Image (cartoon, rainbow, N blue to C red; front, top):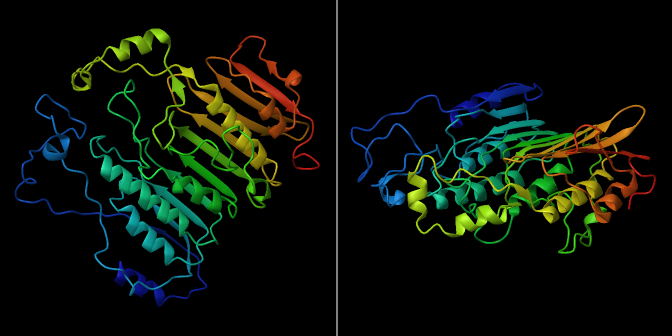
Length: 365
């Protein structure tokens, strides 16, 4: 990497380059890791896999062995891409990105399965992602990020807590970065539902949050949001009947090993979480004067989708959920509409919309 950057340093730094980075080769050892054996399936969990930390090992990703002070800065790199299966550790990506001082577009694909029993690895990856996002040069205008949902073994199990410290610095740093962006697209990323405009426990804007502005943002797409928060708190809940069955489970290892058990997703959206999602988004969108497209998708067995259609004649909010979601007065205030104006589709009651009077409001709340 140092040789590549040193060679590029000799080029005209007024040039605009696009660089795709990935590891193309590896060397297979003569023997497997100590106390392990080869498996074709990374998610394999058998009766003799009682302790995955011993019988399976987390994936290795290429890292720098020192601080890389000899890696030169390159103003000539305009777009940097780490595509799928790039095999590079998130912390190493951060070091490379920091050297691209005039970067405009960044494409990160960190979609990779990691066994849930490697929780420390997943948490370390999350922490490294936070550091990466927090160190991206402010010249960036487009961020395309593909993550992984970090799901438990089975949907019926409790989600993973990826922030053991209780501090969700990824969501915080994403908000700070988004202020400088024109496009923000996240896929399969566990984030706080009030990521953009922080809310208090009552769903009201926190002090200072209404002073945030997004003067450049035109496209906001959050697709495949997992149905849980970074803390592991689920945003859907089970029916009483399903919860009763789950409460009777004595050994989750039996469920993991049973190929037919544990696949039932919680079906009922917990309304307060979705209220908070739309309240936060509404207050933030009021301060996005160039906003053209919003698409939000919470991935679940009962998917929730939300979009803003900015047409020449009218601005329409639409959302769809198998169990019809009804906004409350806080959501209406955040988006500046009357609850009486909310309409259901004449044929599909799970499709609901409202036409906004003006957008953004003449005087942001």
